[in-house]
Image (cartoon, rainbow, N blue to C red; front, top):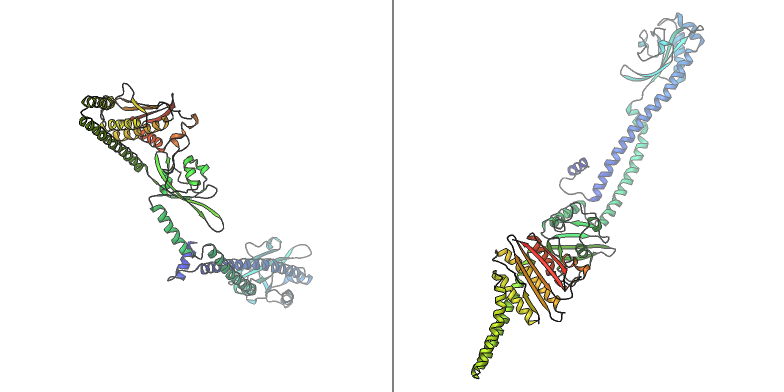
Length: 536
């Protein structure tokens, strides 16, 4: 094929050949090769036929002359150029058989008479000939530059003694003569092949161009190169799945993010053993954009688009991107916003309390003012004291105070487990703890809302290399078959819940714990209890 492309490039150096032209040239090259092969086979067959037919005829003529009684009588006394009987006998056999030459020689192989007078007196014995041993022989020799087929037969007297040798033969036809013989059939074959090849090239070209939407091979190659460059140049993952869940296309980012093998193209999702959430994202119709799923330790945002033509369903193309860091930042921002909202609510509450105090003073109800201030001070100081006594990290302390206020407003009680403690933390650990504690407390408040006296307990244990957090509630607990699913099942921010009734924050919390070399586990103990560990 490389030789064909070089030939086409030399034949059409300035413009690109059409598909029909390429097929035609290729057909012509094939026809030329086949025709050369046919001619070679025909020449070989003609040579074999010549050797078979002419060899038999030469041997038959030589045997007929060697059996002539007159030759057997005259040959023992014959000498070169003496008498005319032997030359007449040889010429008679030659003309009757249609051979090119007939030679009569003595037992030593010396020519007595020949159709070629210049050979008289020469030897006709050859190293390959077995006639000197009294046996007939047929073979090919070169004589005076001519390729000759020859038959040699011994002449025996009545006593079985060899008294001479008869040789007859025919020159091989030249290559030109044989080509002239097969030329009519070869030309007919060439014309038929040209007509069929041209017609087939045009029809095949039309068929292929119909299937390729009228594009030439060069245009298809350029389109493929552009597609490959585009596919592997984008920073988003792109994967195409057929209707039978077979991966038809996947770029490098998709292979990396979905943790697929390099040879994933052509394999089904079952063979690749992809995670259930990935299968759901790649096969389920998507009404809303940007569905989020947790894949391994990454939060991926999926967008699936079905691909159909007028004839059949081609499957779907799904694009996705890594949103892990952004999701964590969103969680932290959400916690910060929630804290700010709680502080604003407390500010508003303080303003109402100041208005109440101002009104009591104006009414000169001084005893009531003192009692009201004592009550408010005790309630606030109790919360601050409980948190500040065991939590030295300001970020976590502020978060727990804010969550305690939210719980109070929702009719719940949030308390710290006795002996809880947390020292000052580095900034990154403080942010990770904010994410985990905020999600677990929010999850506990959602679960405890159904209890008659909702209560949430938060315990924090700070060791040399590990921070351990335990958040429990007195709600209905977790279904046993959903304990693992609440962490592994991710869902879109448009959805409200997944199997097990838990939010996406649990998966994020486990991701944060594992990134810090820890773990997040759930259990039932008079409600739900979540235990998170994070290494410092």
